[in-house]
Length: 271
Figure 1: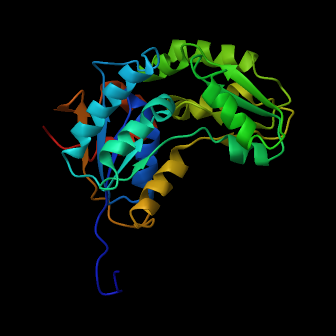
Figure 2: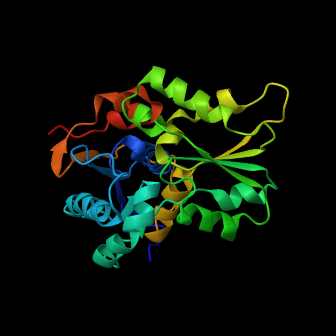
Figure 3: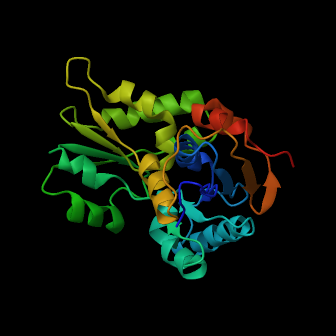
């Protein structure tokens, strides 16, 4: 317990994903705690994780988590929907209780609470999966929920391929019913292009769509798990450590195409 004369310790939060989908949650942590130290542990040698078997995917996620754990984080965010489905139990079994592990779940519950209809944009592998159907059944609360596969969108975002992003977003928007009132971004990569998705889906003559991502919620949950509240006015002294497939590295050049990447890049430690 800290009294008002004591300084609350600066948290260190690790994030795991195959690629740059973790930028959204990392930036959310940075906004909540500008003094927090961040560890981004990705797997460029093994991406994409989606086509891998659950066992293989878990092995890659565990390798990334172990690399991050060497830097003694206070908590670890699995900043990937697919890895949260297949690897969360294995990660928690290995790391907890020493390092709390926070998974990423599509924000179907808050979206459905608005009454629907709701569209869930997700990768083709996740769309129609037993996992996502289970979330819809459990948290859909009777709202009409439409699953929208988005082939190629995560890959396009990963490499900041503007033409491919535009094509994938347009194709998914064409599959999205015009009457939806809420849209769930069911892949962490999609949050990096939320503005482009909104522009493609939002009809000019309709009420504004409610967008539901996961980054803010998982960032807040990670801080809660370690008893470290938001301090958005804290000094911007947080360091950034980047690990690629177990090697200390630099933030990917294509990460700087996004505001979230630019927000984080100033604090990146030199190798």
